[in-house]
Image (tube, rainbow, N blue to C red; front, side, top):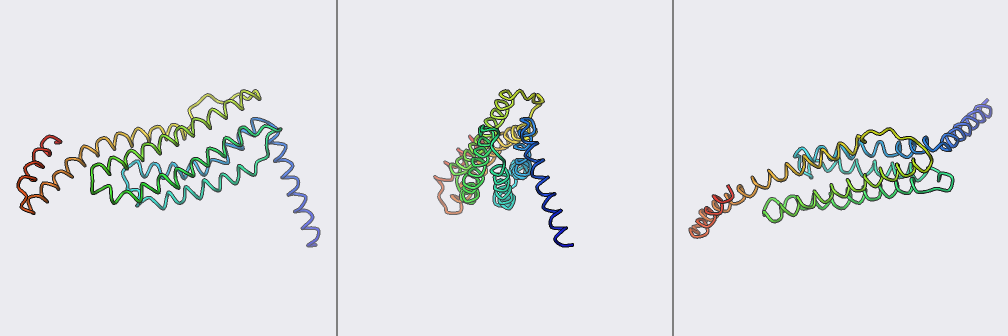
Length: 224
C-alpha cells in the first residue's frame, strides 16, 4: 500500500512539474511567473518603506528591514529556479539583477542609515548627510524598478504579449513614498536646524560663553 501511495505521489509530482513547464512555454505565463516570484518581496519592502516614510526611526523599523532582506532572498531563489525562456534569459536575468540591487540597498545603504541615525542627531551636517543617503537609496530603488518594468515591456513586445496598460502598484506606491519622504525631510530639516541652534544657545549660556550665545541667538533668529 505504501509503495502504491508513493508511486501515486511521484506521478502527481511529475504531472505538476510537466504542467508547470508547459505553462511557462507561453510568454504571457512566463512574464506572470517572473512577476509572481517578486510578489512577497515587494510587499515586505513596501511595508518597510512605508514605515520609514511615515517618520519612524530606521532603528525602530530595522526588524522590517531584516524581513525585507529575507523576502528578497526568497524571491531571488524562486526566480533562479525558473527555466530560461526558449534560450532567452533577458527577462529572468533582469529580475535577478533587480533583486540583487534591492538586496544591496536594503543590506548596505539602509544599514548605514541605521548606524548613522544616533550621530546625525548631534549635528546639522550629519543630519543632512543621512537624509541625502535616504533619498539616494530611494532613487536607486526607483531606477531599478523602472529598468525591471522596461525589461518586461521589451520581452512582451518581442513575443507579442499584450500587457495591460496600467500603472504598476509598486511603482505608484514607491513614487508616493518618495514624494512623502522628500517633503518630510525638507520640513524636518527646517525644524532640526532651529532646534539644534537653540540647544547650542542654551549650552553656551550654561557654560557662561556670552559671545557664543549671542552669535547663536542671531543665527537662531535667521533660521527661524
